[in-house]
Image 1 (tube, one colour):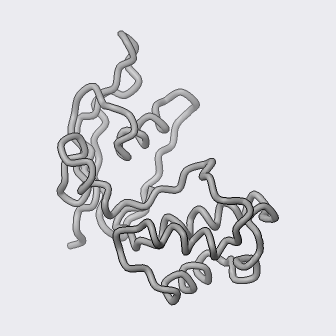
Image 2: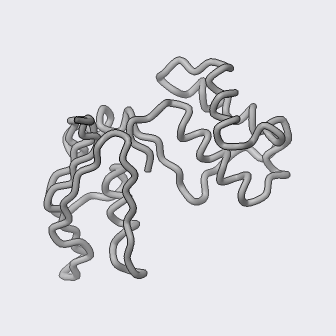
Length: 157
C-alpha cells in the first residue's frame, strides 16, 4: 500500500458565525491525484490555504507526511510543492535563471540535471533560456509548475 501523504480530519473554518468549512475529512496517498470541486464560495481556496499553513483553521487536524501542520508547519511543508496562481518570478531573468535561483534557496541539493529534467517534463525546453517577461500565460503556469516540482515533493498542491 502507498504511503499516506495528506490527512485532513474534521476541518472547520468559521469567519465570525459564518461556516466556510464544516467537517471536511479525506486522505491522499502517494501517487494519487485528488481534486476539489465545488461552486464559487464553497471553501476550496480556503481549504488549500489551510493545508499550506497560510490560513488558520477553526478546528480539526491536518497531517502532511505524518507532521501536524498546526504544530510543526516547517516539517509538514518540507515535502510540499505549491503552484499558486500569481507566482512572482523575476521578469528580467530567463526561466532557467529563475529556476537556478529557486534551487539555491531550496534546502535540497538541486542539480542542473534536475532542472533540465523538470524543464523537459513541463515542456519548456524551447523557452527556458528566454526572459520570463516574454512568456505567455501558459508558459508562466508551466514555469511555476517546474519550480514547484524542483524539490521532488511528495505532495503537489
